[in-house]
Structures are given as structure tokens and as C-alpha cells.
Length: 102
Image (cartoon, rainbow, N blue to C red; front, top):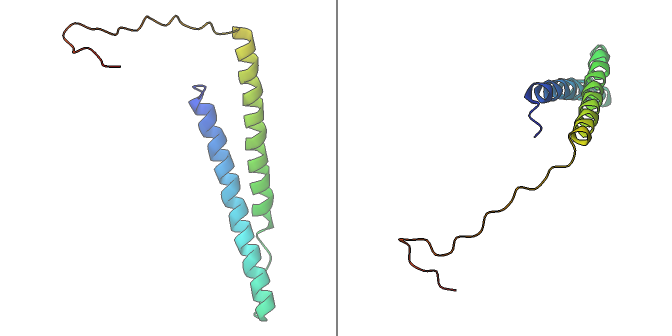
């Protein structure tokens, strides 16, 4: 929207990386809880770092987008109001075309 494609792509990739890490952590946690309830041997708890880093990545992307939004607002205020462009008059009867019926 604001022609900041590189910044937007970076924010999106960071948010997606955080989301994927959190989803992997949640599925590992769900698998562990399910195994406990079924009485099966429980795998060792080793996926806690994924949840932590997923939250950090997602939070960082959110803060980055907040900073970008504030920057865009400041730039819009500095540029001043946009004056509307004059609208040309409507051409109703053009040569070579049949007249429009109302």
C-alpha cells in the first residue's frame, strides 16, 4: 500500500517464521499431552525453545509493523494534505457515437 515492499516482506517473513515455530511447539506439546493421557512412554521435553523463539519473532514483527505505521503517519503529516485533482467535464455527445438515451 505504501510502496515499502522490502520492509513489508521482512515483516511478513518474520511473522510467518514466528507463527510456524509456535505451531510446531503447540503440536509437540499436544503430542506429549496425548501420549501422557494414553499411558504411552512420553518423549523428552525439548521443544520449549521453539515456543519462546516463535513468540519473540512474532512479537518483533508486530513491533516492527508498529514502528513502520508510525513512520508512515509522520511522513503523511509532513507531506501535508493532498489537494484533489480537478475533474474534467463529462463529454456526453461524442462525434461518431449514437446519442445516449436517458
